[in-house]
Image 1 (cartoon, rainbow, N blue to C red):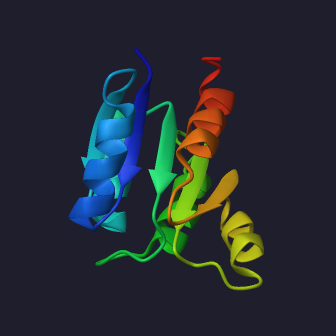
Image 2 (tube, rainbow, N blue to C red; image 1 turned 30 degrees about the vertical axis):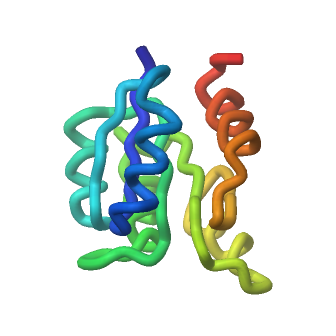
Image 3 (cartoon, rainbow, N blue to C red; image 1 turned 90 degrees about the horizontal axis):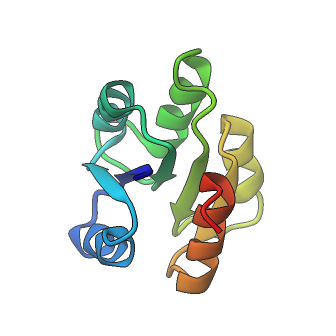
Length: 121
């Protein structure tokens, strides 16, 4: 079973992602960027869903650090963010994210992107 690391600090958002994905994927959860780095190093997920507005270390910096680590750099990162201003997607991609989605999450698009990166179509 493929593993997804969900990095989300808002319980309601995190619970929604868990409900959507738990039947098909093994899930690992982190509530901040620092924990995300620790979880990624420990669990070596197949995909990371990353919020950008996080405590302790934001998703921008966590993604930069993930992509700078040779052991973690190949893990695809899909940003799920309320940041929907002009330039936010480009800035997130410059940090190393592989894809970008705005909140509220379009469930069909989420499934499509997850399947694309995990090869589970």
